[in-house]
Image (cartoon, rainbow, N blue to C red):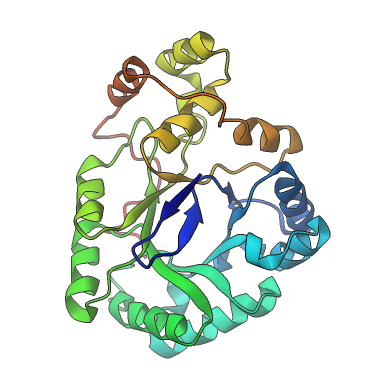
Length: 271
């Protein structure tokens, strides 16, 4: 399953998030994921594990053009020139000539450099270092500003999104600009897996709670990147294409949304 981005390129709807994956096992996990069937890998400079991605792709024997790789510029490298350098540094660590998607990791509004950083991403795309460009953790005001000042909307905004924090208002902003929505912490850092509503739906379908939540993201039209460093979970998280949720299931999960459901940092104050 793929989603077509507003620049015409396709992104696999299900990927592997590499946040907190130890650098020493990243290549092994990447290779195992690709052999399982994953074709989308999400890392970041600040994760400290970019160095395992290229070797993992090589070990799996998958052609580079068949793997969608995302990485991100961290807050301390924001600004035009520093972002240009940061992307090249990431490519060196990744052992890749280009990434498929490069993101501004956080708006970091107190630094007030995210517009300059976005201009650098536009240049990086023009020069071929990345195929697509996007943002992560941007609120409506940050999106409107970069679009207003550059005329270039992000292809995607990667945000915290899970059953207890569904971000419908921000998703509407995305739709207005044809921006795809990508979910990080899609399982709510396991909170959703303990929810009795999710457990009931899982029993109904003969699936695990994690599979139900991942399938919910897919059925909602979201890009989803569950993370795991365990081989058995790689297979479980990928085995979500043989069923769909019905209207009753989706209505029940919609009812889990909470205004205080955020578990990660607030983009308005994170710097």
